[in-house]
Image (cartoon, rainbow, N blue to C red; front, side):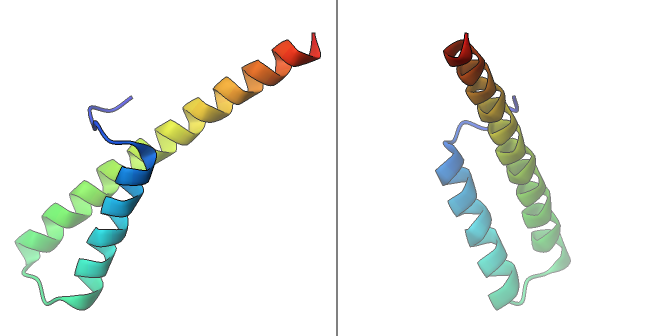
Length: 66
């Protein structure tokens, strides 16, 4: 997993905050670039967390079926 040290909920909240800032403020190109890069990192992190959770749940369900 990536080096982000947040819970899934914290990452999602930060991502929502970034979207709100981009939608509501006039930002310069450098600020937008940094925000988009951070948003991309957070999206990838959330996707990894979800995939990892799915694998864990699938393995747990297989154990229960045995």
